[in-house]
Amino acid sequence: MTDNVTPEGVDQPARAARIRDDIVAGRTALGIELGSTRIKACLVGPDSAPVAAGAHEWENQLVDRRWTYALEDVWAGLQAAYAALVADVEERYGVRPTTYGALGVSAMMHGYLAFDASDELLVPFRTWRNTSTGPAAAELSALLGHNIPLRWSVAHLYQAALDDEPHVPDIAFVTTLAGYVHWRLTGEKVLGIGDASGMFPIDTATRDYDATMLASFDTLVAGRGPATRLVDLLPAVRLAGEEAGRLTAEGAALLDPTGTLVAGVPLCPPEGDAGTGMVATGSVAPRTANVSVGTSIFAMVVLEKPLSQVHDELDLVTTPSGELVAMVHCNNGASELGEWAQVFGRFAAALGHPASSDDVFAALLREALEADADGGGLLAYNYLSGEPVTGLTEGRPLVVRTPDSRLTLANLMRTQVYGVFGTLALGMRVLAAEGVELDAMFAHGGLFRTEGVAQRLLAAAVDAPVAVGSAAGEGGAWGIAVLAAYLQHADRDLGTYLAQDVFRDARIDVVDPDPDDVRGFAAYLERYEAGLAVERAATEAI
Image (cartoon, rainbow, N blue to C red; front, side):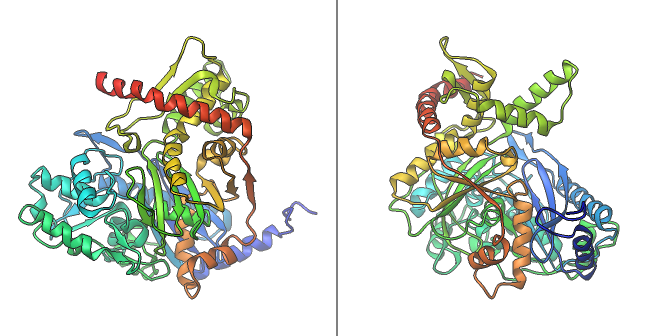
């Protein structure tokens, strides 16, 4: 075996030459995802394996008590991430891409982007993180007999109507962040069904917005809402595998101001991060599920049949091909854990031992394995923002302990990881009570790059085996690239394509729940529920 051959026997120079030819010929697929803290671009070859990547860091802003991103930052970030990907391609393969076989855009689900008839933004983008839509969500849920979460687009729209916001009569189009970017790139006002299911309920029989619920909404807002029917304001629904437009000359210039990228690239339907998470883990068939961990954390469980009743803790959304999914969405994920990692990283640097953020994370996560199974009596709440699953409209990050608890680094880090999974576990209990059974639970996100830690503790939290694939850290940018590539394979259903082509040779690592960890997490969760009274008191006092 030479240095030019991988352990799997792949001749690296020959593979690089093939990839270079694919790039020049436009046989690759490009996926771009706008996450909460990073905009990522991922290029895949004909086999859907990643061949290059680029990224740009960004962050939301709290303006007038609303979480938002400026649209100028959207385009600056997209251009930076795309430029980084092109630079990676040039460094690896010595060519600059001018076209692609397909392109896809994904972004944070839900939220509210409202435009007038002149395509002007009426109010700043309201993201999924906002929890100011309680009255609207409650009234709509009762009216429609369908849980309408606070972050859904229709909740934002109806709340604006309830508050008599002056922009409401001028609304001509409402979309999500992915739908907005896709529109600007192609001129098409469309949305993938998975992302659309976070705007308004979907009828899984028609694979479109529920017509009866649309009529009920129009009756409810008559005389105090937009000047037209809701269906005329929403993006048209498209399914995975359907072409959703082509890159225009104006769109190409928006993405690549250098002028190298040419128009005409076909785009797949724009999707939300929940949909790309399902694709990135191959979890689109009934009895499969996945957990995605980032700024938020959510579980997507593909159902065999509808649930018996409406649950406030659960959203009903769809896969990118329109299958019914129960979603446990928690607003707060790994951000607070990241803050602690920064503190310890700075401590190491102050001692004269600076380390990369990845190394700091890895060290702290490995330390968590040395902890008491229940975290030694400590509690950690990761609530940087409100948390609808536990009924909190605002958040206060907290570490709480009793005098007899064991404050060690290991216990602190285990409780921080447990805190990431705490609210999710409460929602998963509702699904268990519904009798929902799973064959597999897959996990993805940067938290799982350190092998064997977050995966093991998540298995304890859900009391089920957790699988992590070799592409777990690639995330949604890879997922939307795969959906873009699927445009050429839509003669088969999405689940079959993923199983036979994308994940056929994938390395999957499965961790079964450790009984001691399961008991420890159960004890932790009991304290976690009781301690929510402290969290609520903190939101009222500070």
